[in-house]
Every structure is written in C-alpha cells, then in structure tokens.
Length: 294
Ligand code: ATR
Image (cartoon, rainbow, N blue to C red; front, top):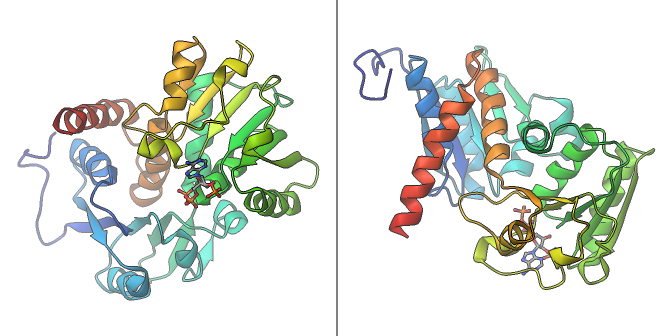
C-alpha cells in the first residue's frame, strides 16, 4: 500500500503523530513515519511542527487536547520536554532528555529516549557485537554525545574516552555518566591531545562535519587499520568518514541511528514493527534527490 492508495484513509478517525523542533524543515522523520504508516495501512499521519522554545508547553498541551497518539522532539526541545512528562523510561531519566512521547488515552505523557536504543542498534548492525574492552573514542560533548555515550555503555563497552574541543564540557559529560556507571572506565580529554593509536571504535558526534568542516586534530591515518569509524551525521559524507573510507577503514554514517530511533518510537505508538529495510531504501532515495537538488 502506498500514500496514494485509497486504502490509506484520511477520515474522521485519522490519528495524529508529529515532530516538534526549531528548526524542523529538514527533518526526515515525516517521510520515514508516513511511508511506514501508509505501507501498513495505519490510519494516522505524522507532521512536522515548527515550535519555538517558549511555545513548547503550549504545543504539547495542544497535542494532548487533540488526542494525538504521540510525538517526537528534536533540537532544542529534548531537555525541556523531559520536565513536562508524567513518567519517563530509564534511558530518558538517565539523560534528562526525551525524544519520543506517547500520549495515553487518559492524556498522560510518557517520555522515552529512543536515541540510545537507535545508536546501539545501528552500531550492532554495522559492526556486530564488539568486545567489551574495545578502546572507544567519542568526539564531542553536546546533547547528541550524551545519548551516544549512554548507547555505548548500554552496548557493554566500558573503555571510553570523550574528546572535545572545549575540555570542561567533556568533563561535565563524563562526570554525569560516572554517577550512573561507576564501574566503567570513562575519561575526558581535549580534542588536541586525543591519542588515536589504540582506538578500536571512533564515534563522531560533533557538528563540525555538518558544515563540511574537517576536524583538524583528528587524522584517521593515526588509527589502527582495524578501527571502525562512525559519524552520526547522515545524508552527506563528512570529511572524517571520507578520509576513513579512503584509508579502507570500516565506516558507518548516522542513517541507521535515525532509522532505529524512529522504529522504536513507531513500535511504541502503533504496536507494529516498522519495515526498516523498506524505510531505509525510501530515505536513501530522498537523500539522493536532495543531494541532486542542492
Ligand atoms: P548537539 O546537541 O547536536 O550535540 P551541540 O550541543 O551544539 O550540538 O554540540 C556540538 C558539539 O560539536 C560540541 O561538542 C562542539 O564542541 P564544543 O563543545 O567545543 O563547542 C562540537 N563542535 C562543533 N563544531 C566543531 C568544530 N569545528 N571543531 C570541533 N568541535 C566542534
């Protein structure tokens, strides 16, 4: 069934889903969820909502009032949304950040963080089960880094260096994580002093590659040939992944994380498994079209 099929209804019983963000125009989530809903003949639509931070609570109350099934949140709302929830799952509580909300029939707000699961699932899909003592370096210390770090620890990895341009931000992320995982060996360092020669997995969560900026301090030629390199950016090859690819290292971009966090949210809302492979093909088509029109 496709979006143009007469069986994919839009009628008096159509339910609402969506994503709140600021900005929101480039989100792939509407394409991802509407494709899956149409394919499975589920009478719901997923819309993008541009919501400024000052209007977040108002938007959430509105979605409760219209009996939406639930919604996602992206930058900059994940932390503020956490504070509006009636209940949160352990991943959302660990991070103080919510990216998925389920609205119960009584209007109760249940908050989840499916980014952690999405990252872990993507890691396993690309690189298999990694040895627990594999030395990991995570670049960056923003909001995305917190979810990735939790995902790494949840995947059983416990030798992790958090490297960031601004050292105090890396220290803050590490301190918060040590309180939750006292037995893990997690440390902070500055990007300028990061030692790559023992690294088994390098994960880039910085926004540098988004603007095509190279991370001058991180030269993949210094990594062992067995190292895996993942960037959470999708839809464009970052300079880091391009260099790692040229060197023949095993690489992965962020599309898998996007897809699997979405699949987990979809399951929470509909009780159905998202057709992940078909959705991935659909998103890759959209990304190719966008690249051709850029
Ligand atoms: P997000 O919530 O998406 O992770 P963020 O909180 O703005 O975004 O964090 C962006 C991350 O990318 C930070 O770790 C930032 O480093 P600083 O803490 O030093 O600002 C990192 N970053 C962005 N541009 C960078 C660049 N050109 N070189 C190195 N790090 C960069």
